[in-house]
Length: 369
Image (cartoon, rainbow, N blue to C red; front, side, top):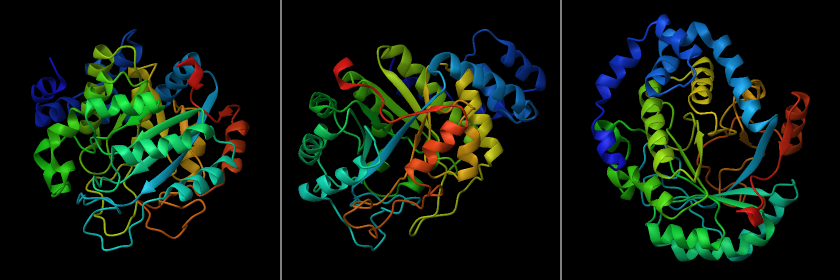
């Protein structure tokens, strides 16, 4: 059975009703369960679990230290291009935004890499818009060849590709691929993605399978918090994670928690996700899955990021720029979204140390893959 079959056997409104009907007794059973499954996960993300945040946080802290120790991995996103053929109503790179577009040249890629390396990073996340005529598999492979000598670990967040293309990227040195469904609410997905390849819901939904078939070392998934009901979307994301781990059991997994941020020409959030909501979600994921990596980006505020270090998070971006050339080449080019935590890498590393944790600047040494 593939994930499309599993996805279609779960009705959005029925899942929503099930989550919102959970009681305090359901939450307490989940908190004390030796094994937390999808039904228990529903209870932990339900409104009924809100009074139990302290217990959730304590257990999340315990489980994270047991599996990952007291470490926080730091990484830098590097945007290669803001060109995009998609219209996405929540993204600054959307095709209908009449702004200056930029794709980094070979020389500019090296300039950006050298600027990032001055901060001590050994783990980089490469990001582009979706523009097949400009940023395609040959461009990706060339960029990775240029970047490889500088970093122990390369992750990518590109447009969905075919299995054979992911195999080529893996062979070129890519360690991890991130792809977000944005929302699992199929009935409204098209309203957020009215034009472009990204409007094909099923093709995007099947992308993690193609990454798994390519035997990539790690797959990252997530939803854009603020598009639809975060509790229901997060259940589907957990359902997807559960399926992937069972089918591609040799692969590592991460979940990211991007909340909508201001950007050029985008819509306002449809649903407000509070800090309290996000803390509940982070802790619920840690109880649901002890092994999954949980990532928080500079979309979040300084105060929030300071306080979630102990709550299950295992990786954070730092000193981020969300525009191509943002570190050295062209700092004023179009951003995908505004960052909130603008502190330097050094400042964030010190916050981590002050919390009693160790900042780690790479994910995994390539020689051990």
